[in-house]
Image (tube, rainbow, N blue to C red; front, top):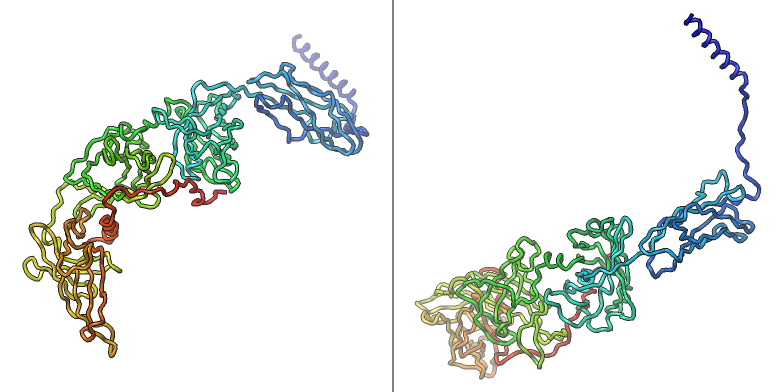
Length: 637
């Protein structure tokens, strides 16, 4: 019985299904027709999808509307789909003039608050407006944020690398007032007048209240505020990539036009531990002359980050140093024409974990030109480079003004160790006033040796280069008999007899007759009796001795006690008593031991010290330190 019910039910389903199939009609759905006069309106992809506006910007945006036809004027109704808080005022229509295929719709929002993002969606619809077969978008979505800048309580610290990369200025920290804005997925900072003028020095932490490299107030346009805009591409604003908008900074140096600084395309700085770092060539310096790569630029969001990162030295005289013990410490000053016994010391590195510590490889010569004022310098034994910090006050005055020293562009700074183990420090120093006026440029020298410097008779013997005359000469000094030496190789002097004093460790040459010299050839040949004379400050002498001793460089130079200062060889024609003249002249002789080419070159600079003005300082007004080093580099783009 149950089975029969199931069979009946199944039969009924078949009947119903068959009936349904018999009712089906095969119909054709037609595509909609494009009405006559259809404008084919759409929103182009060039519309901006997000607007970030300064508070001072106009409270309006422009939305572009396009159509596929151009003939005839038309007014297209606009439909507002989304209008956050009803803040947007959208026109009822988009109006096309005859011949136009694109028109602007101005949307205003006078009551929009700062720091709020408002969304807007506008659409077009209707048979006369929308082409059913068109590919353009019939709606557009955008958003508007009026940036809300909030003052940052404490100033940021800005360490410029743009000017140092182009003009060769030193990188000095500057306080900069700033504002901060939260913009959804990013955070912006607005720095105010980062390159403003100041004529004041740094505070106790070494930070300046303005850009300290300007010559005068005229270098910065203070008629308005100049902003540097940073964007941290991270919602929290505590880490991530950072870009700098290209902004004019209010500065024109050298007549090259208004300067702009900002990020190069596709390049970013990074933020970490409240420190923004733009590496070399990340930022660029622009003026009318072109674009140049900036050096590393650093911006500290807090002073604590700056202090921690730098452990900065404000006054090199206040740093704690440890004396380097040694038997010799002599400073020869060409600037003052004097020699002083001094001690060299090395700074204690209180920031040793920091590879960029200012205390690393820092050395100091205390009480150099005046008590309480020393000379600080950096020396890296690995690279051999010497760097002298700028604008070190030395405690003396010239022409009634305080004196400072900076590293010279004309005299090289270096450290060499001679064959006797003496370290020779050469400091190329520019002496100047605080305003950059140069009064002298000298190579000052410091000699240091851990051990006492001693010489023996053997040091006076061997091969030397004689300098001070018209050309260097390769000579040899040999011992002919006890303490009696013979010098060969001097031009027009076959042999010159010299006496060695073991007690004084000196070598003396007295006037003497030399071997005859023949000049010319054949019938023109003439023989001359050659005589060695000693040159003294009063003239030629036929009796005074020319005395040599070793200096701290390890060279045989005319001693301080020598009566003679040089020599002349005069030739007398054996057949014509009226024919006489100089065969060789050397008014500043020195013998350089032949040990290395580098030391030969090093010696030549030492000889000039003997002709320095010993009566006092050698200063004179010589113009100002030039900051126009821009011409020495190539444009980056």
